[in-house]
Length: 414
Figure 1: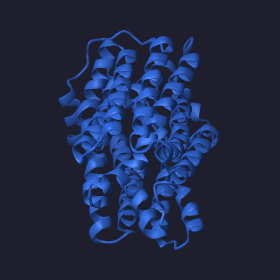
Figure 2: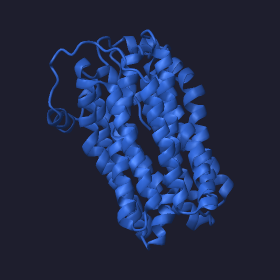
Figure 3: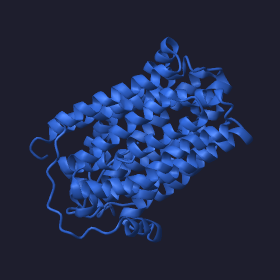
């Protein structure tokens, strides 16, 4: 681990935590706000997709800019975009402003790949998946707390309170990161960077290459997960009568499980199984979670079944991104992770859109069964991804597993 990396990782985790608190103050309330303007399930799904569209377009360019000019200025730019989005949410008096909110949020979220590249720069490959797990644990902690704050602000301050509070919190985060977040040390640019369009086309035209296959595993799993996320609030509303005054507790529950998995369980699992097998376990766990949720008829059983979702994402997303950064070209780590987030944007458009349509026109459980089907394909794809010497047993040590592919880079996102 490079000198000073632990301190900078903690600063980055704090910035991500604060940013996610702001995002999750807003997100669970969005379907209820949209419902007041008579938006149906498909339109709410489309609103979620707008976020992904903006992320799709911005992510590879954010990554390329960070490879060229540095990670820090790009991360700060994303935080400023988020602050503007929350102002729009606080002032929203129409569906148009709610769509603008999601557009700006997606633009700011396009820097996720840059955050992952920052970790890739600051942390040795042998510790990268764990560091990414800690980073996403910080995000999950924000996911746990944000909805509770949002529902209380909505109750005490009315419709504008949550958005304007989140905007103020985000501006404080910008000041915090500006002062404390330093540019990580990186290897000198060797000038071999490809264009963004070339990198994107490589993923499409060679889906079975080491880099492309990891991106597709990540993206398809994210599509299934985004479909679940987009419809969870409406599913709980229609199935169990949950309203906006209580929805925050369910997001908090999922967030707490995610934090515990990423901060406590992920490291030991990787040390025992290696990154590839941990990724496969995450894929199977997600599939089981999606398959089980619509079959339960009691709220307590829903909570039990939904535990499988954060467990699966904690095992799958950090490891697949870590493996990706290890296999990317050294001069293109930021761009490659940005391309991954761009394809994630496509999954974020398609996932909520088909989930919303299935929810409205097929049935309450349809989005979850479709997500389970997608995860079945992801599991098959993950089974054919191997480490360089996985002919026999995979190394018990995560460090040994990563050291089998020297000279290639990794990251997370979920």
